[in-house]
Image (tube, rainbow, N blue to C red; front, side, top):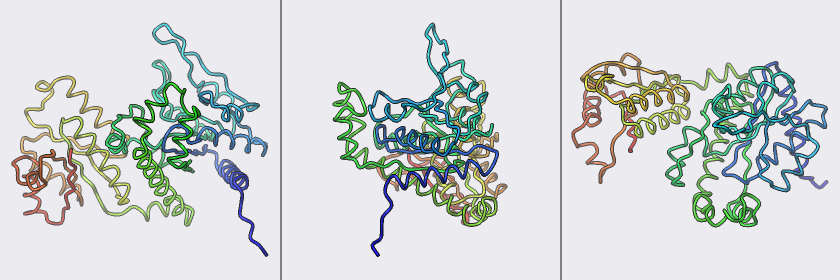
Length: 392
């Protein structure tokens, strides 16, 4: 007999039914994230499709916040779905619209659709970021379907900056994705996405030439597409492991004895890159724990460095915490000795350090400096400790 392949409608129905089962399994809300390589791939459209399918299964679905951007197909999908009115927040004499978090918590639907996960809320809102609103909904037992582009993932910031030349201001901590129950890659080929842009289906036609010449260049989109596919594949790999034997047991098996120690100083850009790189390494290795170490010398005491430098340091340590690191701060004028001592105390297996980027790799390692001294010291006295160098 001939084999009948499943249609897109069949696959969407199965996706909605699978998420429905997840919603019904436990009292804590479930989190599903649609991920795309860029604006315009169809994330919001897919969320609204799923909302309709869940509603057909008699699930109490509510649209918490959606941006249609005037796209005809997306507006059509929104038609007839129950929508939570937005909340007005006054800021600098203007009334701005935000998602009504309190209203959603009061109405307690089974599932809420929340667009633009990386959005920064208007000052005066209860939470600074929308992903924090989403976490609050999930903790309250409300399941959430949301969407985000891959360039908003915190640990990918430096890679995205190198690819596109654009610093993404609004970002989501990796842990939000790692704690999600489902992550779906909404994929579109580069020619298809650029064609949608040229047809005015993503931005106003007046903005299209600038977008095509900058962010939407083919090579940029191709690399972002690869990033999105890779990130979702890694997250799905974890879900497969969890489904195979129960989340707690398998998660414990996946973790190993690797312990990563990242060393930072008050160089703001370098510290951010080292922290993000170490977070990705720790996740890739399945490390049991990873640390961020700041050695404060006498020259970096609070009364000797500027307020801006202090603020950058605090923000970087906060970034490390959000990405899952344990923070270590010690005072010592001998940075190399302090790093080596902490590495031994924490049984570190991989040391992550930063080096500037002169003409050759050999020059990096032979030029005098803290990292060069550290490499030589570790090679002599701690050969079991590997070193990973991050060039900035």
